[in-house]
Image (cartoon, rainbow, N blue to C red; front, side, top):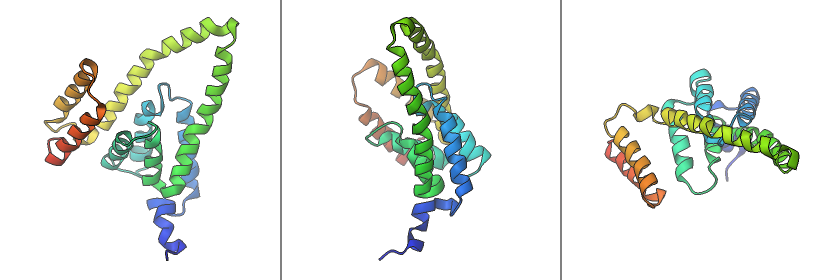
Length: 191
């Protein structure tokens, strides 16, 4: 039977007992949740800066792998936040990153939804949401740039990215096949 000591790595991850780090994760992800125009995925560059470059809690490969694994898995897109939290600080990191990511943005979304239903503010609400589209695109492109960091210099990365974009735009091919192709390219050492 497992003891509490055996569960330590699962509970607290590589950081060990580090409440200060958990609060730092919570605070940073809470701040990012208020900037996540277009979803949590658009804040990946800032998450990377914080946990990889500033704190050194993860390396580029582990960070990109965390995001890629969660994006390939079925379920909500935001699960990558939990994987980053787990790889950083175990289950405590999952709680810190997910609570930080979900609590503030949920409050804002509920308030904005109520505000947008009021007839006197409908046009302002529509203009606001339409103005966010180009910002969201820019944030998504920045996220893509960060995620290609570990494999950007390999010869197969650019063709795989281009093929993915073209196939998603020009066909009705399920993304599952593109995920499978990416996995094969990775195993083969092309990316």
